[in-house]
Structure formats: structure tokens, C-alpha cells
Image (cartoon, rainbow, N blue to C red; front, side, top):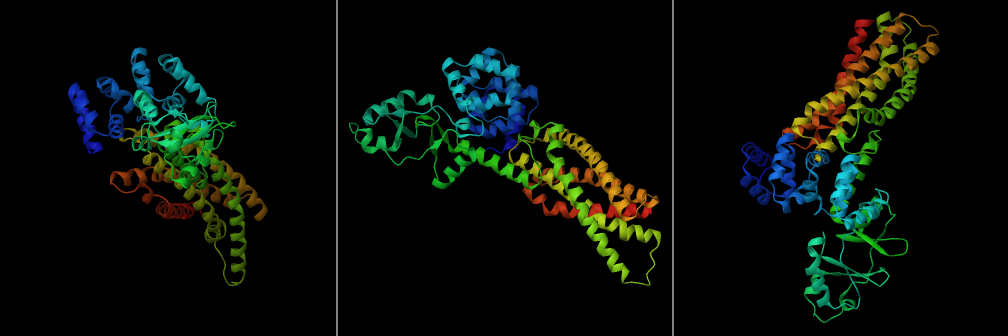
Length: 470
């Protein structure tokens, strides 16, 4: 196996030298997924150059492993004839995934390049919800009849196998397309040619309904350790099949969605670069704002207990600076540290998933930092406004008037939020990237480590500014 870094260097040299033979040799010797990843690391113009050097039979296979952004680049850059050469060998479920990621203008180019039969297959998948079994299934499967002979079934496999993604398992259907059973290719090979399919087929039916949620489908695969499961409609007619490689993507999506929910993130798109700045802002702000607002309860309780403890020390007379620090600022430190810690964890969890899925390339780090900085500034601005309102309410209830101490507290907390949120965004984003650069698990650089570092920074900034303003 060739290392990705070595493969990238060899592809770069071959592209710069227009070395057709080297590109085709690498495409044959390397794993297609590795070739696609290495290709995605190159500059856009070199990606197009290399892809045009590939053999026609390798184009479609490598294309299906490319990131959506690279697929879009190729579809945009290629002529209709070149597009036809790529998509004609793609399976219908891969085409549906491609169409979902492309803008309408390029989708039209793709649909014009496929045959009417393939277009009909695409439409049969698109009519289902994208998160359902029907939305992730393939309609390319081999079916046989119960009264077919094994000899006839083998002949059919030989004739049509190039048109199907999976031929290890055949589905036994009746004249009305109802699922009756399954038969594996090995059962055809090791039985007598004249025997009937009914004699060797497995009648223990395992299937999912086309409307079933993709999470239910994933659980079915895990429960029964299946490699392939047929999909039936409400009339028990077989309409497609789902293979394990499709479910791996589903499992990843569901895990990523659960992790996002745990860190207070809510958005539909899971790919980092599919999320606009506004969508990322909207998806991450809700729980930060709620934490800041409901953290006021913690702040008030802490203040009440501080006053109770101080009341027992009759001899203590607090200076203005001590009063601001102990009574006004200290209870608020817990709230702000919690908000900053959550934001850092959000940034880290998004980046860990993006790195795990190979969505982040070295050449995109600058773009990522700029994007995260813009999101951070917007979120910090919102939190400062919310902070002003809540401090104003608490201060009026607690003190009864607005004085110089109010502005000291507001200035200290707001500047701390701005500085700490920006630092949290940078640390949360860069820590997993740096960890991966040193060949460490990106997840090891997130979670408790980030929370600890951000707590130290936030408390230091908060009380440091408090001393300046008090």
C-alpha cells in the first residue's frame, strides 16, 4: 500500500510533467479511495489535469470516492461528452448522492448525460425521503424466480454482472415482484446445475420498509450482522437493496448528529464546508445564549451564599475593589467559564468529525480559521448584548441603581467574553488539526483538555481585567 503523502507527491510530479503513464500506473496500483484523497490535495487545475489522464474504466470508480467539492469542480470543468463518460458507469445510488451535492445547473448536465433507464432509476430513489431506506437504497440488483434452474441463474449473473454493484446475493421474487427469499452466489456454484432455486434459497426473510428511517436500517444491519438487506414497499414488493457500505455512511451521520446535539449544535448538513457562516452561527448560538441566561440563576445563588458567609464575619470591611471582585465578579466567573468551555467544545467536535471524515485538507486551514473567526465575532457580539441585559436586570434587583460598579462589572465580563470566545474558537479549531499533524488522535486534543485550558484562560483574563477596572 502506498502512503497518502507519497501518493500525493508522485501525483503532483506526474501532473506537473504531464506524465500520462505514471498517473495511470498509480491509479492501478493504489487503492481507489487513497488515490481520490491524494488527488483532492492538489491544486484545482492539477486535479482536472490528472483526472483527464485516467483510463475511462477508472474514472467512474475513482470519481465516486472524491469529495463533493472536487466532484463539483470536475462536473463544472468537463464538457458534456466528458461528463457522460464519467456518469454512465456510476450506479444509480451514487448518482443520487452526486445530484444531492450539485447545483441545479450542473445537475441538468449530469441528467442529460445518463440514459433514460438510469434517469428512471434515479427518479425512483428521489421520490423517497433522503433519510429513509428508500433514499439510500440502490435499485440495481439481480432477481431470479423460484422455478429457475441454478444453471439459468448462473448464466444470468454472467450476462449482467457488470451492470450491478453486488452479485454475491440474488433475490428471489415471484411474478408480482414480491420478495420470497434470497440465494447466495456460492450456493449456485456448489449445487447441481439442474436443481431449482427453490431448493437452495433461504426463505428466512430479512428486509426493511422503504419508508423506514435510516437509523432503523443501521440498527437492523448491526442486529443481524448483515452485508446486504432488501428494501420492500408497503405491498411487500422489492424496490431496492441496501449494502453495508451505504450503512457505514449512515452510522457516521447518526453518530455525528448525536455528538452535535450533546454539544448544543443543531444543523442539517454535516459536511463542514456545506455550512455557511450564518448556518453555523444559528446552529451553535442557541445553547450558548441559554447557558448564559440560565447561568444567571447560578450567579444569583452564588451571590446569596457569598453574602451569607460574609455576614458571619462582622469585623470584615470590604474595600470597593474587594467588593467588586468577591461579591460581583466571582459569581459571574462560573457562568462565563461555562459558556466559553461549551463554545470551545463545539468548535473541537465539529473539527474532529471533519478531520475523521477527511473533509479538511492542509490547503484549507487558512480558510477554516477565517471562517471560524468570523463566526466567533458574530457569536461574541450576540453574547455581549445578552450579557448586558441580564447584568442590568440582576444589578437593578440586587443593588437598586446603576453606578460605576455596574459599568466595571459589565466591561470586565463583556471584554472577557470577547477575548475568551475568540481564544476558544481558535484553540477548539486548531487543537484537533495540530494533533493530527503529529499523528495523534484528533479526539484526544478535545473535550477535557480544551475545557481545562479555557477555564484557566477565562479566569485569568476575567479577574485580571477586574483588577484593572476596579
